[in-house]
Image 1 (cartoon, rainbow, N blue to C red):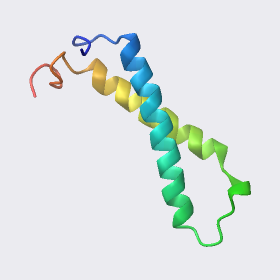
Image 2: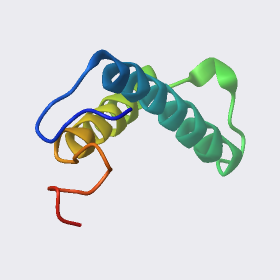
Image 3: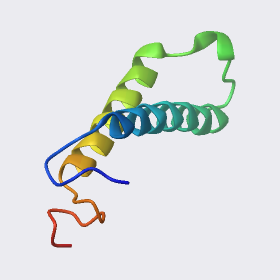
Image 4: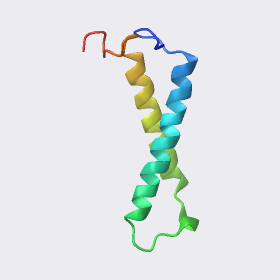
Length: 76
């Protein structure tokens, strides 16, 4: 069940955290695979946190602006 328009519940927060972690990890892995000579000892934690915060907040904003049937603004 989804939350109503302009509301968030704990399930939204949990899913937002999951989206944040997955987006950060996958984005960093793709970047690492595309960087020649990448070493895992040189992980840029600030970059990972920025990706996580951006994706998590984006997910929460999307859910806040969507109704229980997933329509953005209750219209789309």
